[in-house]
Image 1 (spheres, helix red, strand yellow):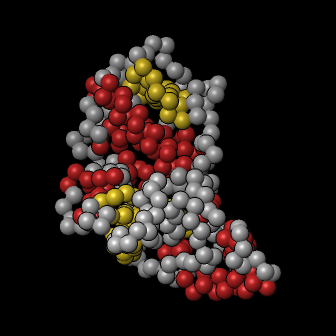
Image 2: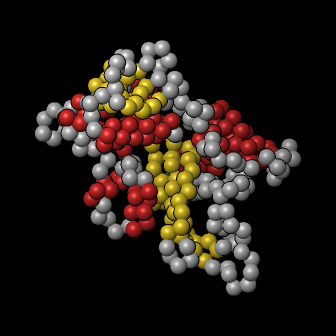
Length: 314
């Protein structure tokens, strides 16, 4: 897992030790209590009369999409047009039948745009359904699986959060759709103000200001990708901010650790022979060579740069 602050350079080959989690793929079964629950109507053309409309998804996902086999634009579009997803969102959001019946979700046959229309519904239902559907698209674009996003759309764990981990409570309040059962704490530690700085602020090198603060890291593994959530705290213990970064899930798999370590040693030796180790841009060279060697072993490994297109690595 890589925690990046600004454009700080990471040392090639610097990976955390493999972690072993008792992980089983989540089997999702969502039971709708009280019989059938209405859902927004999926229609093939925009309605002739409507009050408001809201953009949900375009012809394609934007360039920040993490490209994985399971999240093509066509697949995501089919999922958000699935009445089962709309029904689950309606039930989890406690939208009434009257509210839902006044919504229509339409795919424009000319340009494949998906939009939500408020035909005869209240503004609350229109906003809730629109926000949830856009969050679903964003999550799939970031690399989450369909099963994970379905769980996220119907997640209510934040409503009855009772476990004593106050740091986890902060994370779940910041990201209320993360299913609590999937979150694992994997690291914690401390840093000084010389090692880390507040966002947008210069390093404080004056005498007597080298204070110590703590940090905690959690992760969520979803298919081939792991999401890392890093919580940073102020010297007085109060919460400061949260940073997120993704990595290949094999980085956190204890069974993969020996193989990755062996490949890293080979890549490092090659870079030293070619006198590219430690030079500007060597991190990307390391990742490229690592990817090649793992590909030769039949492993489709993804680098942090591939999984975090909005982060600049140097």
